[in-house]
Length: 149
Image 1 (tube, rainbow, N blue to C red):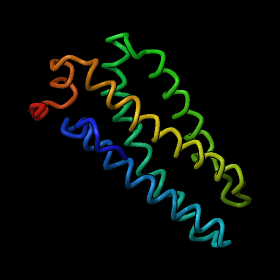
Image 2: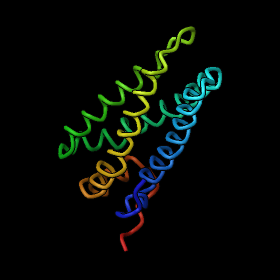
Image 3: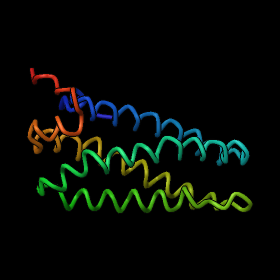
Image 4: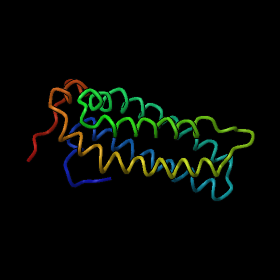
């Protein structure tokens, strides 16, 4: 995760970044369980990952992404990221528990890692620059971003 632009001072970005960290930790544990052949652990970790990922994605798409789409300046990037959400969720959310396709899960985890990197180092810093304070007030009611120092 980045620490160079100050975007985490915006409460929503700080929260989403922390969730990214937690998601990446869980995905790493899932990757290790699959690699070690611990399929019972892998199934449990997949459930845990989905428990973290589904509400995170809903927050992004219903808040930050909606504001960026309405603003128009990053709408194309938002659409690409939403398509990635659908792709990743489509794989991870439909794993056949009786005969899991672990290689497909590993490929989805690779895409998830790249996706998070794009948000952290591309979209989040750009959103801080592009969105007016009124938009931030709408997606983080009662919280204003810390003033830039």
